[in-house]
Amino acid sequence: MIEAILHYTFMQNALLSGLVIGLVAPLIGVFLVVRRLSLIADALSHITLSGVAAGLLLGQSIPFFQSISPIYMGMAFSVVGAFMIDKLRAAYRFYQELAIPIILSTGIGLGVVLISLANGFNVDLFGYLFGSLLAVTQQDVIRVVIASAIVIVVVWLFYKELLYLSFDEEAARISGVPRGVVNVIFSILVAIVISISMQVVGILLVSALITLPVAAALQLANSFRQTFVYAILFGELSVLAGLMLAYTFNLASGGTIVLVAVLLLVIVLLGKRVRNS
Image 1 (cartoon, helix red, strand yellow):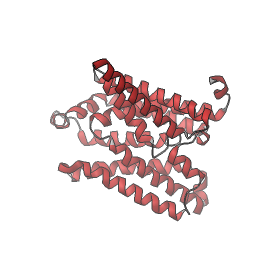
Image 2: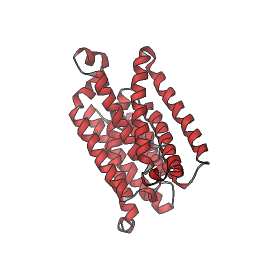
Image 3: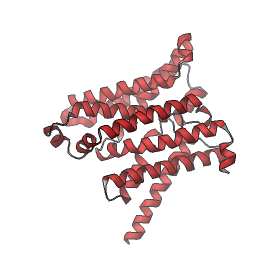
Image 4: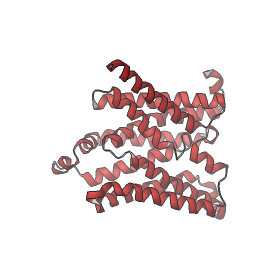
């Protein structure tokens, strides 16, 4: 079965990019969940939707943008959204969670307006929203691999700072950790992961791939490092099984990957409950 699936170039592209995303999405997700900022992924995914809609609209109106993938516009919007979240969190120091609904609402509103200006949904936008196996090209795979390598290297370089900020942000600041700079860098990493994940999982479902494997991992792990290992394992299983099921039964890849991740979480919760009873 695997040989039959890998016979097609589009499945090779989807599997390779999916497995890379299955690595970096939970990697970022662990820090987001521990810092209780998992909803940032939702907010940035909606801003990314606005960027993709803007890219498609510009492609319809200006010939220059027809040769530029709307993903780059989505990535730019996502990075700007990450900066805005950081600024809003600083402005609302005692109500930092307000930054997320502000950006999320902005992303939805702007996206709907831009989509309406582009005369509604089309096949391209539907693929970005919910993921599509056919949408992943070789150029997308290269972009995913390069962006993921950057994310992994930056996480490795700032691992201690990110770890410190995750568990005690105030103590980290007093100890000299450049909180503002590290937070901005981390927000940009989240924006990059969301942008590169959209074609396999879909903009509206990418936050699930970031958080669900981590939720399952937290039930099993006894340390922070174990949480990474389990989260990445569940992320890879979700992507691999989801893509194969999507191909076999002609399903939407994004939704199938997320449902597999949910199933793994349910199995872990039930297994732990049975073991404790």
